[in-house]
Amino acid sequence: MTVRCSTLPIAHPTAHLTARPYRRARTAGACAPAGRRPRHPRAACTGTPGADSGAGPGALAARFARQLVEVLTGARPSGQLMRHTSLDGYGQLASLVRAGALRRGGPADRPRLGPVHERSPSPDAVEACVRVDLGRRHHMVAFRLEQRGPAGQWQCTAVEAR
Image 1 (cartoon, rainbow, N blue to C red):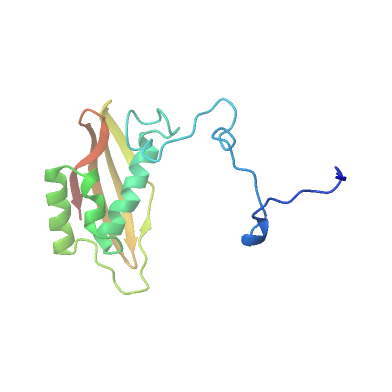
Image 2 (tube, rainbow, N blue to C red; image 1 turned 180 degrees about the vertical axis):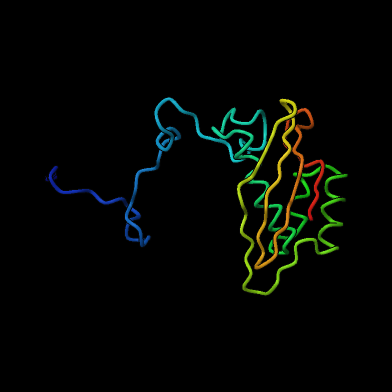
């Protein structure tokens, strides 16, 4: 004779083997809001600005300016920007890093970025500049981003710092 009780919860057969309680697996669409597809991590770097990520040229320039200043101050290795720069752009960046264009006044000096001023001379190019405060010193960093290659990835083609 078998007795069933439908009011008692039934544990997963392997629940005693794991520290976490059993959870149902999420479906692919469970995380994405209704009517929107999930954003790809490189959506901000490919295609036209704002196509998938909702960000325009200003947001693209601001993100790149922050990363560029981190490289110029030595907080980030320059190799991390290699795939986001053209060959000429990376050569200019490497020479600025070697010359110490944005040297910190002391270990407590953290770079503070002012507003990023950008303009778009053509649909596939953005030119931007930003003021960087390092302690009592002020620097200007200018760069140009262009869409390159068949995928249309944004790359830095020129960098200047003073």
